[in-house]
Length: 265
Image (cartoon, rainbow, N blue to C red; front, top):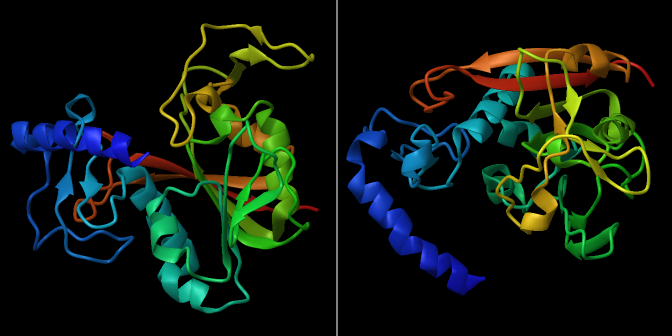
């Protein structure tokens, strides 16, 4: 793994140095809202020039948008919220800047998804291998659940949303980002109603932090998302975040974050 990372360093460095106009250089103006530090936001992939990462915590605009929405709803910094150990947060990744800042907390739990390893197993303290369609956690266990670009990869995503609903305490909230379009209704790319998967649309894979095999896109989410989540017992709000100092934006538009609050048992 370390060799793979080292191979990427020269390429990423070349991208940074070769495209100086893609970055946000103003160290004294920029401030990351996750690590709370003055920073430079750097683009290390010229094909995605709007994805600029914090120099310190490597946060992307999506994660900075998620934390911005979380803190606006809490009325306090996430760190201050988690200082109260009665508050429990579960995140569906082990590679995010939120994880980097809060993994040491006893009330922060996270999970990876390794399909080639047993699920419901603890990989490290408070780090689990889980399939979000069926986890080992007790019901009504978490105040906040966070996911980013995850639910489109869940084989049966509505089972995943139902499981998240089960895990949330009454009034608990799932904050998430997903690829989302307003010009069509939600559609399955893969038919998973039977034992065998049937391709309905050409297969699409996203970059996966663990294994490419686990990054298959099963669902394209569309304009009926909020309505469909309501049938599962959620009240969902769509937030459009744009903050210059934290470099929160989606290319030329705001970043979209969904907030789904558990409203029924």
